[in-house]
Length: 92
Image (cartoon, rainbow, N blue to C red):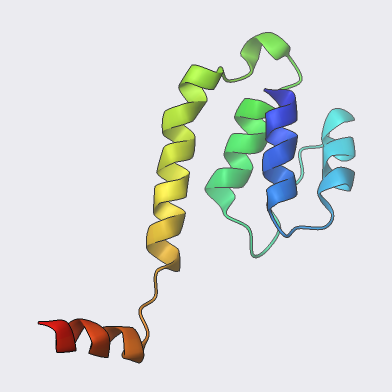
């Protein structure tokens, strides 16, 4: 799951992820940078990238957590525009 955690970091637009992973491997847990989802950051560093492989999240346990994060992100990113609202009203 370590590499899946790295993949999750790469999917963000945060460019300093590799440096933070290096710091983490040296024992310094980085704070969540501004603009990134703190819950996702915590899941990545606390569950996927645990230095003890036996404490890392399993794929089975990761699925509901990732599903929740994806659904929340989808809900938060849906910001209907005036035009979209007009289309909905016109179709009623």
